[in-house]
Image (cartoon, rainbow, N blue to C red):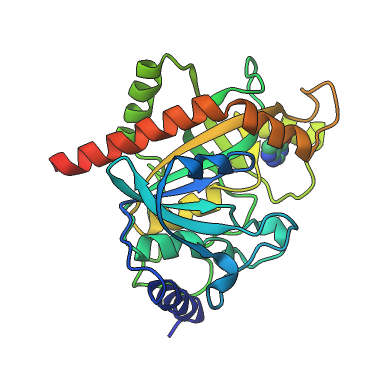
Length: 280
Ligand code: HPA
């Protein structure tokens, strides 16, 4: 059997031996946005370090765990802390948690992140609906022998972010009176922030926001046929646009500052996903 698939199966068994919760929606919380998990009526938590073979974050203070529970009526699994490529993992390990959440039952994936704003007019504190992505600067998580149990060898990537879910996100933002920016997210490998020249390149390529996560996760999720919606929290203006040097503290603080709007929007989106699922 494919070693990546074997590992996924071992992780699945390890989680299933602890919890029998079946989530409908999977949610990944980006830097500074982990507080969202407080909104859940928690059914169970599983620390990443307790899952056999699971890639545990090497960054101090980023232990990470899955939180299983209900957001109103919707059964969800939330990743409090994700695995990043810059931590040194193989890209297949970076997306293992996404694959695991799908195996546990989640058919829809809500991806969130902190990102640097590239597009003119964006400000720190903006929320951006991800309408498309550029993942070319990190290896494909589908590299290596295909896992046919998950999806095809050459999956189509024309609509990574589900059009209906984008419309849902727009309606939710409108209903809440929130301004929701829109744009293309580009993933760079990190961990260093970009040079102003690299940001210039990103802008020329059509990117509106830059970060170090998300796009590879969306590739793996799309491979498995998950429906995906993505929200970036613009935590800072990207290098060369921002008048001062970038820091992790700035990113975390910005996350806290938009936490209320972010929470309201993501809650509304997940409620909408659940309602749509009930009608189908
Ligand atoms: N660049 C890359 N990743 C980021 C940034 C940035 O400016 N802000 C938050 N994550």
